[in-house]
Image (cartoon, rainbow, N blue to C red; front, side, top):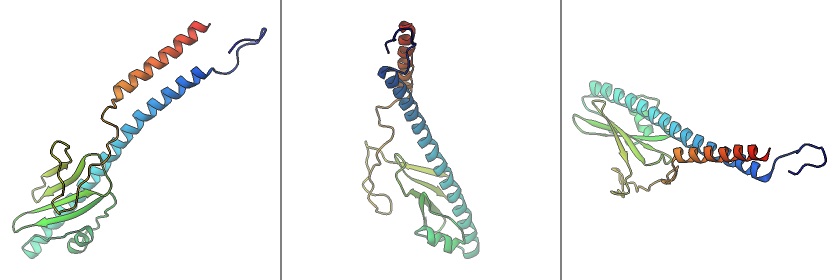
Length: 180
């Protein structure tokens, strides 16, 4: 801003505001990416805890009745195994045979490429992911699979975004120094 006779410059230039908005938006996009990743990890941990509860319930059920239950949805799991599994982020089901079972949690909303998390009677955990190189059209129960839109986009790299923010702030500082 040009100075008027003896008065100091007041306000900011459009370029200064542009750089400020650019830096804040880059930092916000990095924060959103990290937040989404941590949110999905928390949901996955919750699903693993529910699967472990189902596994314990199945083992007790087998001890009492001599075979594993075949619960096809979350309400059947809660009724048969006398549990309180809440299907907030995942739907649960159990596939059982004579000596083994597989409890599966499928996300109710897209979680990146994660299709399902499964746990067998020994406590071993299996993760199923959607792969564009080898796409599946149906999950084991026959439901159609669709890949979820990925965030961040494949071209986004937080390190590059941070570098852009550093360069932009450097240009901003250089401009401020050169103006005085």
